[in-house]
Image 1 (cartoon, rainbow, N blue to C red):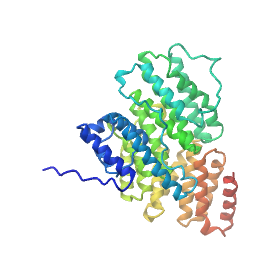
Image 2: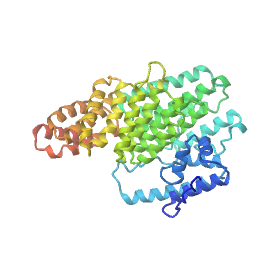
Image 3: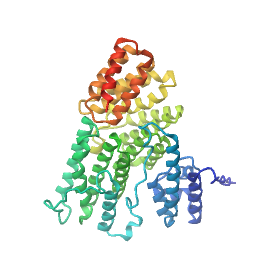
Length: 461
């Protein structure tokens, strides 16, 4: 006989209470965990683990559950209490600045349509929902700021192929600048107008044959700017734009772009000290992995590896890296969209090397594979990916310094700092700080002392 489901304890936290309510609503609607998972694009196992408070949820996912269960906003309102409880705990913890951004701030009301029954809404109304959501979603860029109007260049009467081509070009250019210069400074500022234009196009009537291309182009631009905002530590804007990009990808039924946006949400959550939330995003991205290319699957398995590494799950980390390597070996040229251009062999080695790095600090046998992969990434990244090369180089130097090889570490660090010093990247600055801390045991060596002085200069405000 099947076992009776384990009773859930709602008294341990508000988040546990939310999981109990999710299960109650699911049962009230007569849905299995698999049936509910199909509605929100999650596996049955992940739904059950969220109910048991073994996996984190997000405001976006809570809203999806509420819609799927026709809960009338009850789950959304209770999730707001979950976030208030989490915020109070974070305030009490008084964390370091880099980790105080924690996880993924909840998108404000209006970021997503409350009614997701798309069969009842004409396409223009759905686009208006999404467009309005983006305006509310990026307070750092839009809300309360008197941006120039588009009076000199009115919106087209209907969407044309050339309008979509312009958005694609903007996304390509932004990605190039972001990789070269980092996400801060001019890069974000330069693309605010592009995003405003793209978001306004969602209110324009769109011929059915162009619907997929329009949403793919707008989603890709939102994801690119969101990823840049993450690099600049504008985490609220990053989360909201990446969430908006996910919805655009889903509106376009573009599982490939959806995988990219969820990968970035996962990486951001992991970086901000919420690896469990990052793991949820990565696993969400791998639902129906058969629809994804090998590179996209490998990318998401690397996000899983990095989440497990941050949580100290060494065997799970190694298993995820092994799965990623196996799948990446199947990749073939020309099968990916333009948003995956960055994910080449160098990037794969860098991502897996970063996952190895986190366990190498406590597991000596992981030092060699971590160093080997980071070294390969540094050697194979082209000049188009300065930030990635600098981040991997800084990590490699930190690892070597920690492992007791200050001479090799110093030479590696100086090469990485040559590039990191040219970037507007808060991630690069934080990595330089970590490198500086690793030099402390060797601070009396002349070369290391000079390196410490250089790091101090580069990270100064």
